[in-house]
Image (cartoon, rainbow, N blue to C red; front, side, top):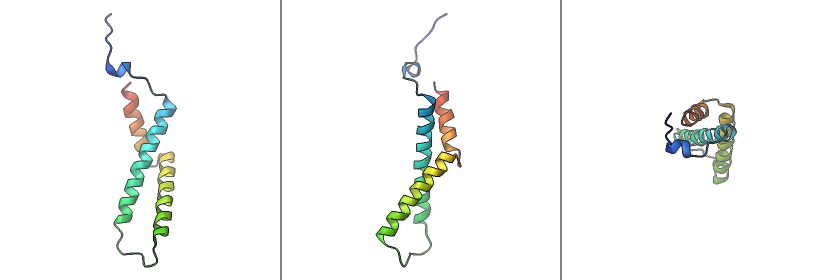
Length: 88
């Protein structure tokens, strides 16, 4: 039997928990960008808004995105994890 070495085989394998965490972080970043884009598409200006309100809203959006990613609500992390796990 002839065994050939491929670049993918030479790479250090990523542990499953690390792969899952990385996929969840990717989903969270994706969701943060999606929420930020949705916020930019507002219909009217906030008359009582301020930079402090904007900062608080961004932090709240980031926490929401992290929670959604952890729950797997959109399934992006699962898809990324399966795709990268198949590359081993």
